[in-house]
Amino acid sequence: MRGLFTADQVRAAEEPVLARTREGLLMQRAATGLAAVCLRLLGRAHGVRVVLLVGAGSNGGDALFAGAHLAHRGARVDAVLLAPDRAHAAGLAALRRAGGRIAPDGAVLDRADLVLDGVVGIGGSGGLRPGAAALAERAARGPGLVVAVDVPSGVDASTGAVPGAAVMAQHTVTFGAVKIGLVVGAGRAHAGAVHLVDIGLADELPEPHAFQLTDADVAARLPLPDAGDDKYSQGVVGVVAGSATYPGAGVLCTGAALRTRPGLVRYAGTAADGVRAAWPEAIVTGGRPGDAGRVQAWVVGPGMGTDDDARSVLAEVLATDLPVLVDADGLTLTADDPALVRDRDAPTVLTPHDREFARFGIGGDAGTGGDGGLGRGGVGPDRVAAARRLAAELGAVVLLKGDATVVADAGGRTYVNGTGTPWLATAGTGDVLSGVIGALLAAGLPAVEAAAAGAHLHGRAGRIAAADGPFVAGDLVHRLPAAVARVRAATGPGDGRPAVRLPDSGP
Image 1 (cartoon, rainbow, N blue to C red):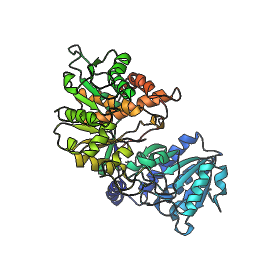
Image 2 (image 1 turned 120 degrees about the vertical axis):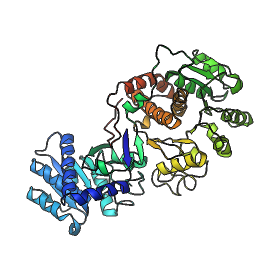
Image 3 (image 1 turned 90 degrees about the vertical axis):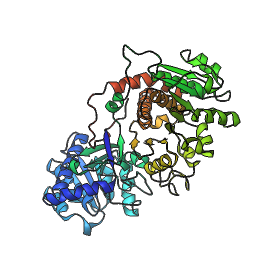
Image 4 (image 1 turned 30 degrees about the vertical axis):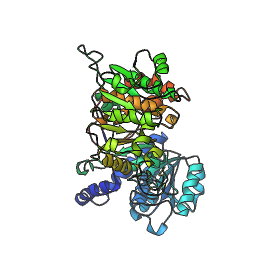
């Protein structure tokens, strides 16, 4: 399992390490690791053109020392100094000794093979100033691979918010621990692939702010049938989804639950004919949930409508003592009457996207923060904090959908999904996610783990489907067995130490 940390947590961990090591050692470790990653990305050093964007302070120093390493290996290195009078003196001297040069302006970006963004580090706040913003834009247009030093300049390292101009990097080399802002919100897109350099902080790091599951972590949470199992012992899911108006929601949700391999799926919605035709493996009862028979968990809400009948069905399901996942129309109804969830003793999983989240009226700060906040009551710039607030308010698990889905429980345990892909932004994929998580709830996983593992599998299936080009939600259902096989093939369970979201653009 991968730990994710805030900037304050990392700075606090650095203090005792700095106190017991010689001056400059941590920066040398960071710069050496940074240069090694750059060499790996370039494939060679001799003759390549490297441009350093250097701000004041230690982030610029990291870039300068790394540039000196690359110059010693034969690279042509030019540094653009944004604050010449405040550039890191020792780093600047090292670069000059290695044959690096100070560029008079940003024209060198137009011929760069690699650009190192050392403008602002994890202590930065707000968007880039105009001069730095112009250089960041020129670098993005240029031919060079853009590599951020610790965090892309202009990205909030603790939240992933991008409140103004920011560097758009293809890779980020981060030091000591993965900052949560690199894997959530708009920061995820600006960071690109994240590489972790160990600088000796592991023993000083506190409990992570959030976690990210690996394939091996998810595999450990997927129950395997044994010789003593039957269809009732592997989890029975009840599904109330779809309607005469939206039968597809019932078909997709039921199919996803089946393809995630529970023992049995019972469908109790009003799209019975469509579900029966698509999935003869499901037990289709229609009528009321109480007529469905024994289940271990319920999925309720997708496509069911918001009329009085739907409200009555939702209340009936939430009145049970079973785990319940609530999505889509069910969320609209729950936002109107939060006591339906707040008064439950059994686990509840809510799966809103940003607009559904805003209906609950207890979300993040006003303003978009550059990453989808909807103003007062909306998600706001800190997606992790917003999910935690709603979870604590309702005593539920909240899965806040997004490119990097956030899952939080009422006690603050939080996961950020690392397998999402923009290809999943298509109609019906949320219904698929609901079915996947419902199957895991029925199998007995704790609600927060079922939601996090379900998001991981859903993202894996999306990546596998996207390998063949554009897909629809029905294609995603049929990729779920391959996604399960993919995660079960993983070896080496996570060890709880901070780790990296490695480049992963394929299935």
